[in-house]
Amino acid sequence: MMIRCPIIKEVRGKGLLNAIVIDSKEEDNTAWEICLKFKENGLLAKPTHGNKIRLAPPLVITEDQITESLSIIEKSLHQFAQKI
Image 1 (cartoon, rainbow, N blue to C red):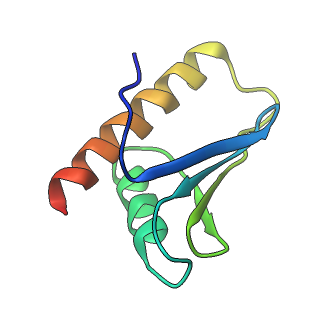
Image 2 (image 1 turned 90 degrees about the vertical axis):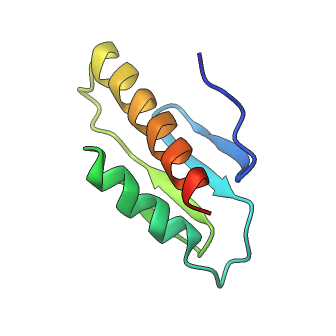
């Protein structure tokens, strides 16, 4: 079960192309720092437009891989929130 995270402003997208909008200014490094935390935990994502994190998995991703990715996102955001 995903727990609400105060640093997430919005999650948006269509199909597999999604973005997490971070509640920070576009000039901040917050999205980049979160992407580095994702990488440490085994998930690659790209910050874009300052405060957005782009998620674009391959079309052949499995349900198990999606579940694992969501767990990594939740774990990473929890670790990041403890840091700030």
